[in-house]
Each structure stands twice: as structure tokens, then as C-alpha cells.
Amino acid sequence: MNFGQALGSFIGGNGVILALAVFIIICVMLGVRIVPQSEKHVVERFGRLRAVLGPGINFIVPFLDRVAHKISILERQLPNAMQDAITADNVLVKVETSVFYRITEPEKTVYRIRDVDAAIATTVAGIVRSEIGKMELDHVQSNRAQLIEKVREQVAAMVDDWGIEVTRAEILDVNLDEATRAAMLQQLNAERARRAQVTEAEGKKRAVELSADAQLYAAEQQAKAKRITAEAEAFATSVIAEAIQKNGLEAAQYQIAMKQVEALVAVGQGAGKQTVILPANVLEAFGDAFKLVKGRG
Image 1 (tube, rainbow, N blue to C red):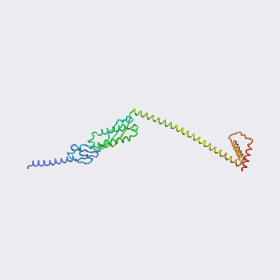
Image 2 (image 1 turned 180 degrees about the vertical axis):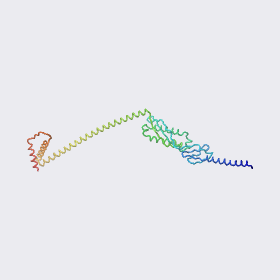
Image 3 (image 1 turned 90 degrees about the vertical axis):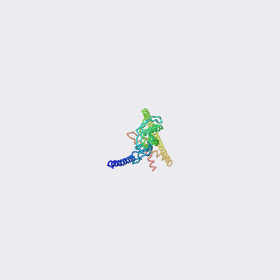
Image 4 (image 1 turned 90 degrees about the horizontal axis):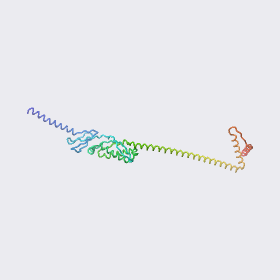
């Protein structure tokens, strides 16, 4: 064997080894799949679903299996959407919605729906219109949290077959047209004016009630005072009557004399300069009173 034949035989043998090594490297490269944490890969074999690869190192059969779809499992946000809706009391409103979702089962998303974002947006719009159509405008404004919860539940139930989880569904705003807004403002002003009138009328009524109560209380107190005075006079009269009954005429004369003295003292204590005309028997009254007091002593 000459040199040329030996060289050819060496190159041929090494070529086979080299080709085999290259083939093995290619198989390893095709058979090993490293999936990022934020993705899932859908593997097909001859056009049919073979497996779903999760994050990390995965192995497939080279030349038979292929990664047909690389699906991100990160949470996504649909663009804010505006849709018209009519409330139960026939008021046209514009509702702004926002939806967040993520893909949990890529095999369903890939093979059951083509445009995920459009499908979710259409579903949300239909549910929002349906729910708002069951409520009056006042309830839409005051029970927004309840409305959002209903929308979220229904959207989650409808997109479950697509392998999607709706993490948030928000109603950002409910807008009215100018005509409706002006009418509501006018109604609000009228309601405020009515409440002010009612408050004023209730205040006047309360003032009248308080004044009547005060007058009634004053009358009751005066009547009570008169009753107490009458009772005191009756008691004094009964005491005098009892004294007369026990002591006879002398007690009556004593009371009369004391009253005369008290009257004369009161006249003498009057303010200012004045002329006091005394009856002729004034000294006799003092004398009688003194005698009676001395006699009782």
C-alpha cells in the first residue's frame, strides 16, 4: 500500500468519525431544550401535540419532536377599552375597562383560540354591557365594586376553556354624555334645594315646639306657685282658726294688732321724703299689741 492509499484510508476513517461526532452534537443540540422561567414550550410530533415543556432543562426526540410554540406565561394587560352600555333606566354610559390575564395552559390557548387579546376584549365588553343593563345608573355608580366582582367572575368562567386565568378585571370609569350629565346636575341641585327647605322648615317647627314647651312650663310653674301660695294661706288660716278656737278672741285681736304694726312699719320704711298720715288710733294699736304680747308672755 502506497502513501496515497494510506492517507486516503485515514481521511476516510476520520471523516466517518467526524461526521458521526457532528451528528451526535446536532442530536444533542436538538434533543436538549432549556426553557426560560417566563415561558412554556409546546412540542409537536408529526403535527400533533406531544408535550408541554416547563422551565428548566427538557429532552425531546431529535428530528421527530419540534418546539412548535413558545408561549410567555407572564401576566399581560389588554389595552384599555371603551364600550357603550345602556342601564336599566335607559341611560347611555361609556365604560372604560382594563383586563389583566396570563396563560396557564398553553396547549389550550394554542389549539382553541387564535387571537387571545381580541377574544378576551370581546368577552369583557359583552359581559359589561349585560351586567350594566341589569342595573340602574345610581346603582352602577354606587356599587361599582360589586359590578367589578361580577364581571371578573364571569370573564374567568368563560375564558377557562382557553387555558387563561384572568387576574384582574377593572372598570376604570363610567362616563355620561353631556345631556345626561346636565340633567343629573339639575336634578342634584333641585334635590339640594329641597333638602335645604326641609331643613329650614324642620328648624322653624322645632323652634315653635320649644317656644310652646317653654310657655307651657312657665304656666305650669306659675300655677304651681299659686297652688303653693294658696296652700300656705290656707295653712296659715287654719293655724289662726285653731288659735282662735283655743285662745278665743284674744288670739284674733293679737293677729290684727300685729298686722297693723307691720303695715305701719312698712309705711315708715318707704324711700324718699314723704308725708305719712297716721290714723288717730295708731298709738292705741301699738298699745294693744304690746298688751297682748305681754299678756301672752
